Length: 501
Image (cartoon, rainbow, N blue to C red; front, side):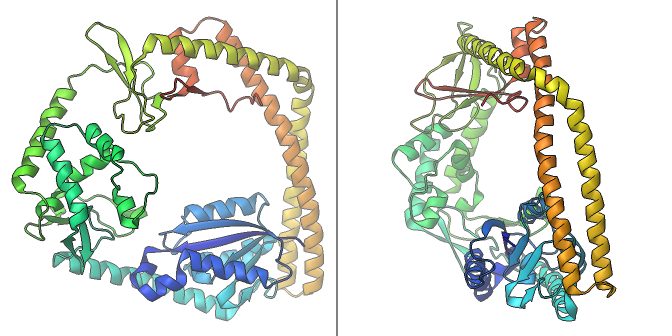
């Protein structure tokens, strides 16, 4: 049997609390262990391998993006073998993990391997065993215990004024849970405050830092260029952080797990003034803050053009272009950031852009007409037949899955031997796979039929002339990306209705 392996890796925030554990359970370490295991087992060598990863997620439940993608691939028959470093990587909940090992994976004919626990479902058909169940119970209790202890320790350290976050703000180092000035980065912070105090806008500051190749916070952290850029938001984050005047603010959230954290009310914050050495004076900080609020009030008086709202994007920075009505009543788009060399630097006439989009829409609809005409005759005759075939195939597949479940029950009850169970299960699995492939092919034909009908309705609506230009753009335009070299990319809302490829 050829295997399609799903290699599952998980690292939780709890694992990072102990350096030795973090090293042994790191994502790269898990990956190396699983790859090494595969190369040492002849029945797995040459298998197709897909990686699924959850970095920073607890194992107490299966509400994790990576494991959900793995389950989806299993459901669609694209994975038939799951390998993990140990059972705790897959999950720490006894009941849920047990359900998958004892019921779900055997029914779906999925092999499960937990390397460090010496567990392979091929050698433990349907029975995880007392040792595995006990291991899961220990993992579950460990997870709950550790979570409570960590929360208690973190709150205690926050009460004492310790910094319990991972990375210190740009310009500081985290030394023994407090901030120590990093002189090299602190110079950049002071300069940002001075540039803002001199009247420079956030976008101008960001553009200056990018032009000079100044490391962003992330790049400085890793000591090398990563292709990151300073943005107005990055600059704003620096200018509004009270850490730079020696104040520590903690307990902003009510949870220490990122995907469960919720913001606390400001009245619940813990604030420690004169907590560490400041990088800028309070006078400079307050001056910059005052200028920000003055500029904000002024900017709110500007008139914003509503046409194409947030649909016209700068190809340089990825931000929405700002539509403005100028004094002479000429309406233009312009990039509000202009923080990279490839940002849209010129003003773009809204009327000219509208004409380009409407012409492109007309061309696209005409191409769609050709495709619809090409498929129409085939579609009318096959649509209803295809739906009947799909229903029939689904019914057969459901019956086979039921038979597989009955087989498993008979095996557990001792009616079937291990060999008889495996033979019959493999026969049913092969038959199910063939029916699933036939269903998939028929579904594709059905999708073409439905898409073509929807496309035909769209064409009729467009040619009826009942929609104004503004209504056409609002309904059909998804996004238009503009680049500084006059290149324009248009995406339509109906592109998924009918492929032109």
